[in-house]
Length: 121
Image 1 (cartoon, rainbow, N blue to C red):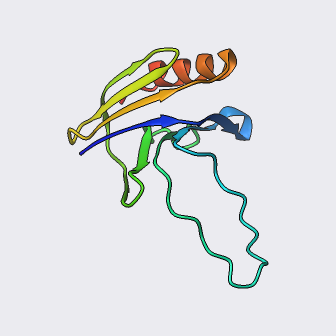
Image 2 (cartoon, helix red, strand yellow):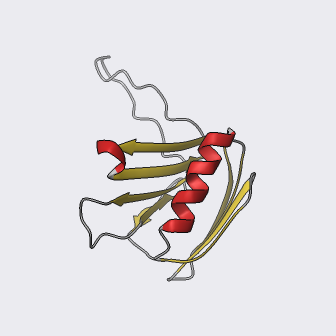
């Protein structure tokens, strides 16, 4: 499986003082959903690739999850990763590959670069 897209939303989030980190590249930003409306419809899935790690669990490596707009999957190890200021290329151990083009601010890019370089599986 090969997934390529342009990410309009690139996020780097930390929780619990940096013990939990999540990085995501999404084709479109998450839609605002008002579940209180009668007969609301859940929006269709969007293409994304996300990485997360929980340092509270010392045996936990990076969790990789993705959606191709229809199917979801995850829990595979990273074989190769190449990151530039505007693109990300990832190959997983199961040979799934991802090519993502994106734009983000300098701080987000720096955080993502540090995260991916220090958390190789």
